[in-house]
Image (cartoon, rainbow, N blue to C red):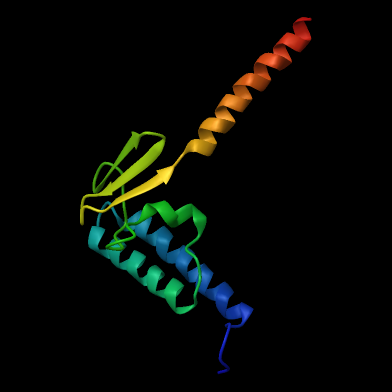
Length: 123
């Protein structure tokens, strides 16, 4: 095989397999948590082998340090602190921080726009 980027059909298959594995991880977590952790680990290995990003819908659902599937309330804690979402993995103790400033901005903007729209109707 030539060096460089992989063919599109290979990348498409890898993305499909990652999606399937992550869906299985979510389904299996209640009965077999170790199996779901293994599924996440396999999806991570596929992503690194084919130089792909994990789908955005799944990025916050596993620990970046120990590659374990995270289920809020059972093996991770989610806290809001200083416009940050702190996700703490209870398996390894890693804390992942994600900002939510954009959401707050959008909320304020919608609030202001709704007021000005209502005032425009009343006037």
